Image (cartoon, rainbow, N blue to C red; front, side, top):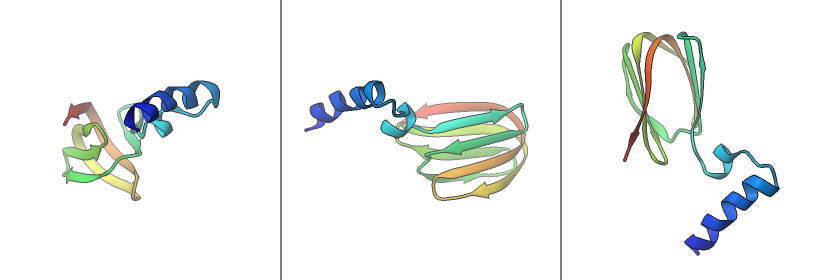
Amino acid sequence: MKNWQQGLKPWLIKYLALPSDVVLELPRITIVGDLHVYIENHKGLITYSETELKLKSNKGYIRVMGSSFVLKMMLPEEILLEGIIKDVKFIPD
């Protein structure tokens, strides 16, 4: 079953023009300058402080480092972080 699903996902992306981040359940990260980070499709908040944000994703973790962080919006699968963004990293499981 798993092999069939793995073969189906690339076909859905190519022939139905579905966004790969949606089909593969990957996070989508939008960075505006060094002031805002908008992250969609995350699986939960792990760490939040004035200098670090860490979120769970399907393939590991997303870590944002910087300073003066303020959570402007937080929904079950979306987050908007404002502050001075210095680094965004993917950390595998």
